[in-house]
Image (cartoon, rainbow, N blue to C red; front, side, top):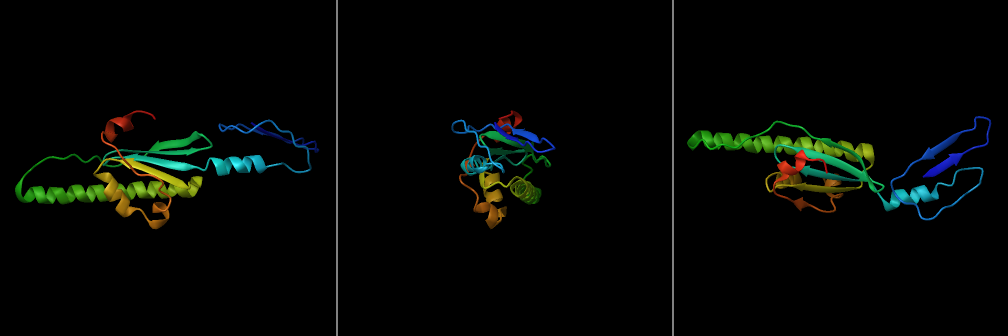
Length: 164
């Protein structure tokens, strides 16, 4: 916890509860707040985003200061695969590929918004063998530069139904 108090006429008093551990106990008495330990926490635990996705579902988590800052689902249309055969099959396959591309663009837009709003510096995308290549092709350079690891996982759909 960080505590800020003032003996001025307005008697301002504010405390900040943190999930990250601060080293030792300290007391500073001065005419202005001593913010260096808080600034160090920001450097030690920069916010990062984890995107877990497949072609039908996605969860986006933002972590920082050793805690989950927020999480949410990125919803989109569900695409099912079925085999028709012949000319309709080729047309249906193009439809599936277009749906995957549209899905990847939705995920990139959500990721860009989180990076902008939460100051995310690092990104860890995870997904199945279908969505990851499409997603990688759609990521702009400013997001690609923030990727610290890329995880390929199978059975993402079942994993997305449960809270992490």
